[in-house]
Image (cartoon, rainbow, N blue to C red; front, side, top):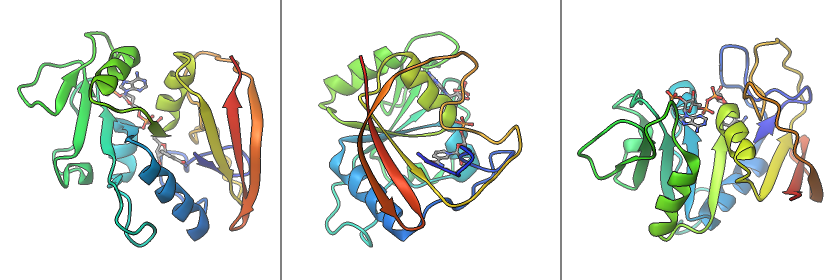
Length: 196
Ligand SMILES: NC(=O)c1ccc[n+]([C@@H]2O[C@H](COP(=O)([O-])OP(=O)(O)OC[C@H]3O[C@@H](n4cnc5c(N)ncnc54)[C@H](OP(=O)(O)O)[C@@H]3O)[C@@H](O)[C@H]2O)c1
């Protein structure tokens, strides 16, 4: 995640804002490239329409990990950029004939443990969760996070409704161990391991 110095990941109304710079973008693309899959929630697709690919500008001959979107009700726009090629999977709770749409339970939201089993069956061993706040909250809540990296940029956003990195309703309270820190662009990158 990338957040402002006051702990916000976007402007109120989920409007995208530049928090980090080229060095951090490059780091994110290298990290994507080292993973077997990248995951975001449909909220991030609707707000930012990211491609979720590894840019050749940052990584030569990228491996292009599988792109996974959590979308319980199938509300992802059909022209979303994540559909640019077939290397994607939509985790949902609604039936579909499309083999790239996988049912993960029939509850209100995608069952993350079912999704982890499905990804494991597909040979996915490393998953990078890129947000947004609700999805990160769910992964913490379900105790599915091994490492958490956050870039803190040099800006204040303010606004009570601006999203934060772990934005669910319930308290989660997890203890972290700081394993690395580095100044990058005009901010700082922190890497934590989740204590169990
Ligand atoms: N600064 C950063 O590093 C960064 C990174 C990524 C995103 N963002 C920002 O984050 C904002 C979007 O965040 P967001 O919290 O609104 O959306 P989000 O976390 O991307 O997506 C949340 C949606 O995913 C769906 N979902 C399905 N199963 C889920 C589950 N088990 N747990 C949680 N969500 C599940 C839900 O919609 P359904 O019920 O319809 O399925 C839920 O509303 C945008 O403003 C974006 O710019 C910032």
